[in-house]
Amino acid sequence: MNDSSVFSNITTLAMCDRKSTVNRSRYWWFDAVKSKIDELTSLSSGWDGYGAKHVSFKAAYFSLIMLESFGDSIKYVPSIVPGTNGDLQIEWHNGENSIEIHVLDEYDIEAWRDCAGADDDGEEIHLTANFTIINSWLNDFNGTDRVCNASTRG
Image (cartoon, rainbow, N blue to C red; front, side, top):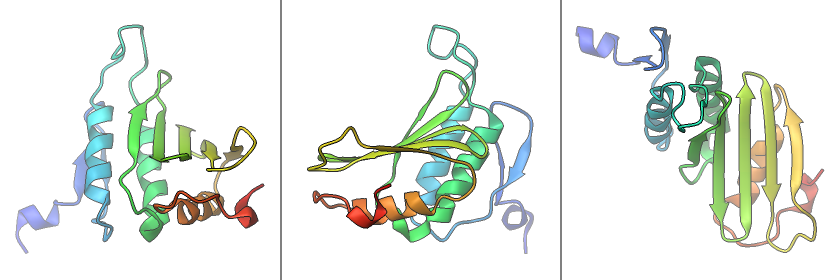
């Protein structure tokens, strides 16, 4: 085994000098997501021109680990955008269906979805460690324009 293969799963998030081991993932979308998160962590404070904080290492790393836990339920690479408080927002939109995950910090998640044909303003939940409801939402979402499965609605 050569040196490059030994260290190929080490990444440095550009916003700080910390290094974190990120195991190679078997999911097709992982490299695109990791690349976007790396890009967002390289933003400096004030990136928006109004004093926004840089994306926190904890929010970035936690987002990556959380997304990997969804595995094959992710059928589309999500949009990932920085928040002004060092947080990240992860989004999927397909016609009238949307899922948004706001990673405020590690173990501090606000999740929202809206489904085609729903009469309300969507479903919003606060999560700390159990993300199985988001996994259900992703399974409902997977490329359909149908009303989300009523069994996963809160």
